[in-house]
Structures are given as structure tokens and as C-alpha cells.
Length: 147
Image 1: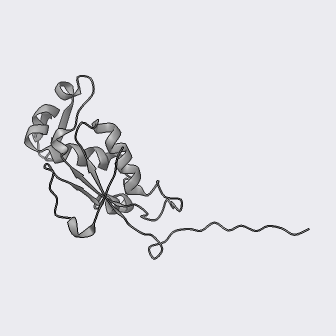
Image 2 (image 1 turned 120 degrees about the vertical axis):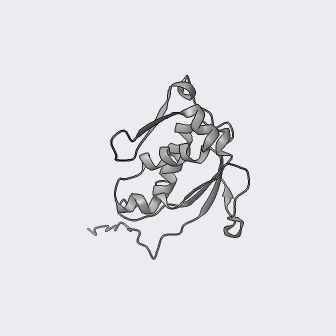
Image 3 (image 1 turned 90 degrees about the vertical axis):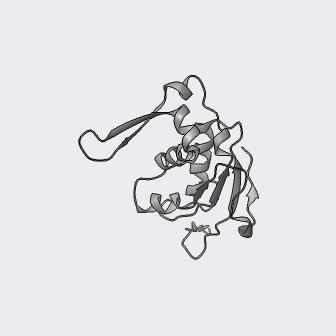
């Protein structure tokens, strides 16, 4: 009786292929879109996903100023920053931040969904968020990604 022996292939930096994708943020719910983006940045959409290797793809998000919040989050959600100095805490409502710096909303949401270590910081660098419909990554020939 012969034994079948299967080996699992683990990805490494030499075998991983990083693709480029464009996501249009128009009328997308912030949390749902960012959760899917974080999974693609980690590489969880690939068959050879390996937790300790950066298997993810590059993501370009356009029209981030047109994202939507569900419920009353646009008025109630508050983003905090802290400078480290006494009295250095600042609060800003999601409505104001969406007008002033819409890229920050997507970046902070995705960053919070990635691992909190060196690998997570490496994955986060593959995210590019732009307020308008234009982006400077045309040479990479990104594919459109629909959710």
C-alpha cells in the first residue's frame, strides 16, 4: 500500500506576485470597503496566503471623498489625535474630517485592520488613497476592482 505524500507550498518574497488594483470609493460604505481592502493588502484573497509573508497586492483608492457612513456616524463618529503634550488632545467629527482631509478616513480605517507589527507596516505602504478620480500610478496598469 503506497502512501500519498502532499506538501504545502509556502510563499516567500521570491514567489509572491504583487498585482495593482484600483477601487472607486463612490457610494461605498467605509467599513465594508476598508475591510475588503485590508484583506487584499494582507493577501488573503490568494491561494498561497502565508501569514508571515507579505503576499498582498497594491491598492489605489480614488474618489475617497464620496464614501458614505451608515446610520448617524457622519455626525456622531469622532476621530481623536494626541500630540503627547498636556492638553494636546484634539477631536474632529467625521463630517469635518471628510471635508478637510478625506484620505485620512480610509487610511486610518485600513491601518486599524492590519497587523500591528513590522509586517503590518509593510502592508500599509501598499495603500494609496486619493481624493479625486485621478492617480499617478497609470504606469503600473492597475485593474479595476469591484466590491
